[in-house]
Amino acid sequence: MSSTPQLAPPTQTVTFETQIPQDIYLALRAHGLFREALAEQSQHLLALRFYQDHLLSLGQAARLAGLDRWAFIELLGENQIPVIDYDDEELANEFDTVDQLIVQLKAEPQYRARRLFATIDKLHALEPTLTQTEPHEEIQAHRTEK
Image (tube, rainbow, N blue to C red; front, top):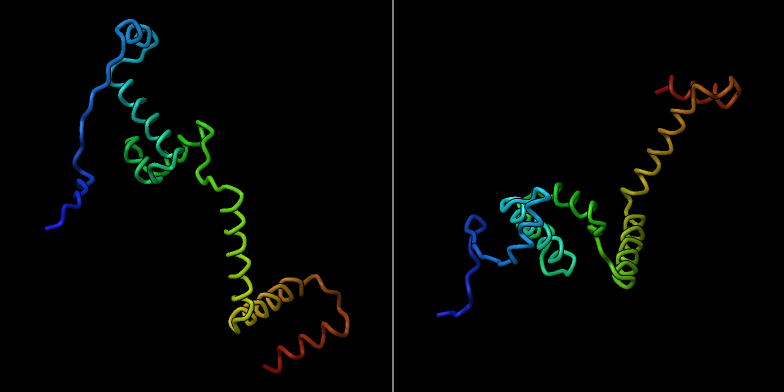
């Protein structure tokens, strides 16, 4: 039998208490921060810190904060915490990967065909602005032949 701990399903919660000095609580309460608001803000702050320290993923931190992912992303922004926090090496690796993908895509025949069709579409979009010159008449003649 394995002794690996099982993770609790997301619907189960664990409650823990924290103690603060009464004078601090009274000072916070004077600013309108009652127990419920303190608990909510504490969860937000914990989620922000654990996300910033890379202890929780975006989804996990959002759940801890009691928010959906988009609301948590907004909370990150309000607290000047980047959603994506790469160091220079990680960012360079990401750009290298993108460069490699571009090279691979350009080698694909479908890519070349898409570029050709995109160029043709651009020419079609420019067609009304072309003056009535001989090349334009050739394009029209070619179209009527089809």
